[in-house]
Length: 167
Image (cartoon, rainbow, N blue to C red; front, side, top):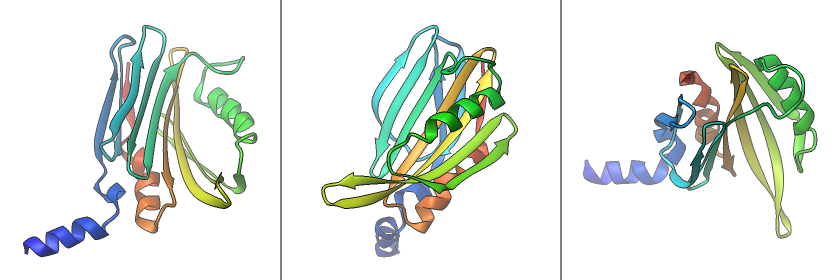
């Protein structure tokens, strides 16, 4: 039985073990919840007007930003979506046909594929963003997986299933 568990741990993708993640922007009074693998914190900054978290777990990368709107105009989820769609067109290696959106109860999820040059090879990276807005502030939970397999794709796209925030 022990050998079977060890083998399963080696075979199953790391993202399959995603669990509840809670990040607290203490200085802002925000809390963001979603499912993701546990990450090693690379950076975390919290001020009364902005929050930033960067973390990694093998092929998985996570960033969370809560900040003032990045485009002029309104401050709603739709305003943030329009701003984001305008910026995504400039992402290097973007596969435009891969862009997918899904409305969430408190935001929107956008997923897409990029190919990033590494030496002479182009490496596939799957991205998903959970965009949300409230009280004049925008948030972006961004997860990406380098060279994703089918299990990792499913786990990354499921990040939004348990998404919520409070402020």
